[in-house]
Image (cartoon, rainbow, N blue to C red):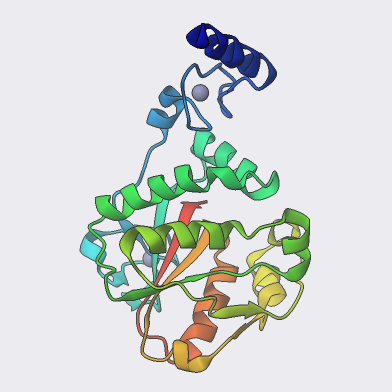
Length: 240
Ligand SMILES: [Zn+2]
Ligand SMILES: [Zn+2]
């Protein structure tokens, strides 16, 4: 009898709140993920770090790339779990970022952890800092997706997370600006550090959701370096 009631309850529950894959909209019978196993398995993860200037794959975490005329060193490494042209990943990021699906954080966090393991990234002596949102965006979205992701990663690798950066300027949405020069100008001086003592001589895993023009990340790196940060790895879910 009890089993029967449970079955009825589950049936009613399924009819009222059916679990639908966020991507392909197929019904998920006993799934807990916001997407079905098939969609999940189709997401392609990267296996290397990237040059933040030309986005070339970097062999063995080297810090020199062949872009430009000379081999130029750069001030940080780009770690991108996936690519923005991956339709399923892009769709998930869209829900995460613009539709405030904070419950996607564990799924996207798991993907990022798998990627970090793929790269054999050594991050034991790093602290984690999320890229902050402006107060206006935070009010609109209700949560900072980068912070949510950073918390998940820090907990998994047993690292300290600090809110080391503060956004002091409401910038325009980067996507609405016409070129990279405009984007760099838009985010110029938009961050300050909360407490320089927490940054000095630290290796930093700087977490954001996506890397598109790179202007926001460049600016965050610039201010952290100015305050004495040592190595910086910019970690994102996807790069454009
Ligand atoms: Zn699906
Ligand atoms: Zn390069």
